[in-house]
Amino acid sequence: MAFLNGRRQRFDINAEEASPLAAAFSSAERGTLAMVRQALAEKRMRLAFQPAVYAADPGIIGFYEGYIRLLNREGLVIPARDFMELAERQELGREIDVAALRLGLLTLQRNPGIRIAVNMSARSVGYKPWTQLLRAALRQLPDLGKGLILEINEDSAMQMPDVLIPFMAEFRPAGIAFTLDDFGAGATSLELLNEYGFDIAKIDSKFIRDCHRSARNQPIVQAAISMAQAFDMFLVAEAVETNDEAVWLRDQGVGCLQGYLFGKPEVEPDFRRFRRARAPA
View 1 (cartoon, rainbow, N blue to C red):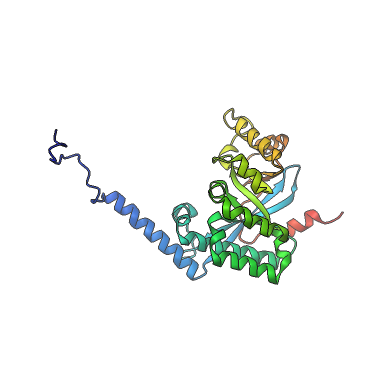
View 2: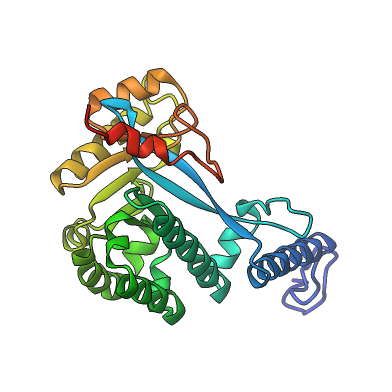
């Protein structure tokens, strides 16, 4: 009756009155995003590279994944979990993708013959600074495409087929490979998966932990493997931390393994490891 009479009760919520906790979170988020923008503007950024090794022979590195690291003015890494989800919905996310691509291309230029995966959002395909950077680099140094892997989150990919499919078709002849990241975690359209023609699928990390004995994770991983094989995608498992996980994944047909078992992300890795493993005996 109080609601019908328009009388406000003690437990009514006024949407215009932000709670102190919500205000604190909002202030912290704004502060973090400001630090990120400042780091980009002052070029306080780098890539940390983690190897992905062949499951059949972990001594051979298939490629490196480059993770963007943004630094505050004290030189400390701003944790990606604190800003990436927020930035993804803004132009800031596109600027981060530009920075990651620039660093990845520079690394390929300085280290001919290696392969590097750079993360991107499908939204960046429509962002002129990002596509202009990629096109300019390939015009000047066409061989860079042979070493570049573009890694695209599954949810992002499935939301933007109209721009992403033609983009992949345009750049695949340059030698660029495309990875579907977090495979198995989202709602993948089989029809779109067939149209995309991704070269690589990376199984979502949350299904890898204890996969050798987890009754919950094993069917999911096996289904992802079967689907990847049906669509002719080379399969990678990330976040592999134990030998038991590695052996089980190898026996199931996973092609590459990535995780702390084989190497942590490093800002200055020994890229000679990549070349030595491929040198003729």
